[in-house]
Length: 377
Image 1: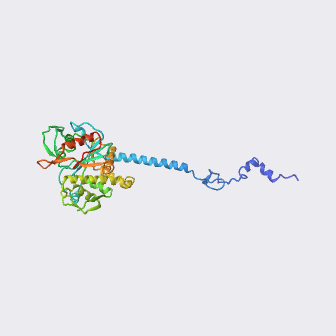
Image 2 (image 1 turned 90 degrees about the vertical axis):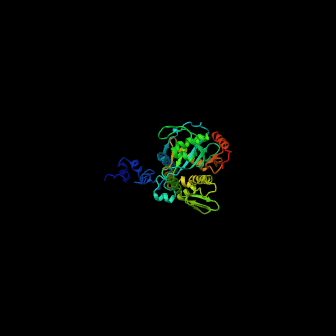
C-alpha cells in the first residue's frame, strides 16, 4: 500500500504551512480577546490595563475650566443686562476737576415702587408719592483705604445753577438755602450730584441708588444680617424698630426699620447715619463670603435682588460696582474709615451747617487720595 502522509504533514500543507497556523494558536493568543486593544479591553493575561490617570486628569481639568469660563461669561452678561443705567452725569454742569481715586455717591431713596399696600404697611414706609433721599453717602476708594462719609439729609446747602434733567432748561442759582435732600426731590439724581459737587468741590465719578424694596430684598436674599443693638435697645414706632439689646440677625423688614430709625436717637439724623454705615458694612462683610460667592443658590438670588433695584449712572460698569462693594466691606476693617460730614452747628432754620474749614481739608485729602485725617461728628 502506498505510504500515507504523516498527520502533521497534512496539517502543515493545509492553508499555507505550519507558520500560518502557529501564528494564531501556538502563541497562546485567546480567540475573541484580541489583546490590550481587543474587545473587552483585556490584555493577553485576561486583565484590564491600568487607567491612564494623567490623561483623565488633563481632560477633567479642561472640562472644568471650560464650564467655569462659560458660567463666568454668562453671569457677567446676565448681571450687566440687569443694571438700570438711568442717571446721565453728562447733564451735570460746571463740574470740579477729577482727582485721584474714585468717588461714589450712594443714595438710599424712599421709593415705594414695586411695593404692595400690604408691604408698605409691613415695612412702615407710608404711601407718599414720588421719592426722596433717605440717606446719602460719599464712598472714596483709592490707595489709602476706603473712606465712607455720610451726608446728613438735613445738611444746609445752596442750590447752584443747573440744567433740568428732563427739560434741558438752565436754571440760574439764586443763593437759595435748603436741606440737601430737597435737591433730589426738586430734579432728581442729576441735581443732587450737581449740588453735592458745588457745595464740596469734590467730583462725583459714579452714582448708585437703591429703594426700600430692593434694600429689604437683598437682606432677605443673604439670610439676614447680624447687628449688635446697643444697651437699652431701640424702639421707634414710626420706623417700626423694636429691638432688644444684644447681637441679633435682622431680616429685610427689620433691617429697613433699623436704618430708618431717627426719632429714638439722641442726635436724630447724625446718629442715624452712623447706624446706616454700621449696617451697610455688616451687610457687605456678610455677603462677601465663600458661603455666598461660591454657592449659586445664594449668589444668584442675592445678585438678582440687588441688580433689579439698583439705579446707576450710564458709565457704571460691573467692575465699578464690584470695586464699590469690596470697598464698602473694607470700611470698618483694616485701613478703612467711616465718618459724618463735619458739622459746626445749626442754622437759623434748624438745618445742619457744615464746618467749612474741615470740609475743605477733607476734600483736599480725598482729591489727592491721601489718608483722611479730618474727623466728623
